[in-house]
Length: 241
Image (tube, rainbow, N blue to C red; front, side, top):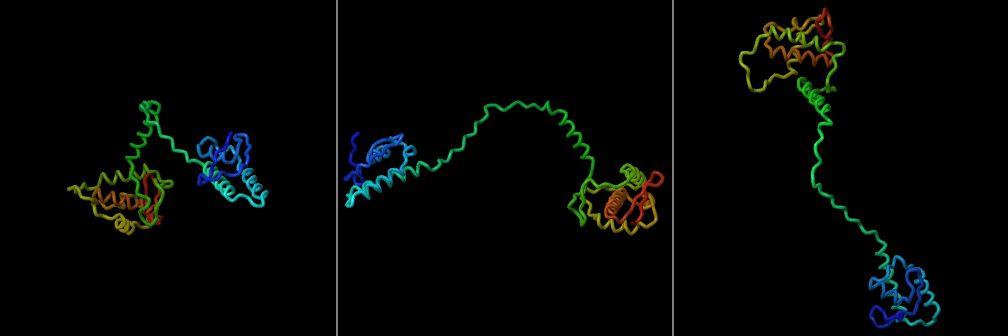
């Protein structure tokens, strides 16, 4: 294969440096031309031996042809730069998501029992009232445990007091402005260290709204450790701690 003159200016050809590798064999000028025309993959051609051959050429001649040496150096610089670029990793494009032609059919029948159980738990929880744990100086985990006092006993005591309480004549749509903190202060003054039932504590003239505030205040005071409770003769009794 005949080499054609190759140089940066297209005038002087590089010196006849011969290259022999598994993927290419020929002169430096031929390798330059093949790489420029995208006919040879530089990743398969080692450039270190070519650089050593160039240095040997420069050291062998006491007065080398500077034009040929410059042409060879320009060719080597081009090859090294091209190979460096070819060794850089190419970022892979993200694969495009395939659109589903049809949505999968619903299979809720497989979870019918779970759905029914969750619905039942939700309806049961809707019947309970929980105070927000972040309110107040002493937040607590919900629901609040009442130690050995049964909630059924508290519910029975509250029911008896509500039955005797006076109904509210005019129900206001507006939200009540009463503060539970203020009601707790009044209840704490009324409770003595003597054990009393809920019916003995709440005044006879109390309305149903008053009864609810009394009951909530007592529960909160129990949580704060300022009121004690016990079961006596199947009834709940309270006293100041």
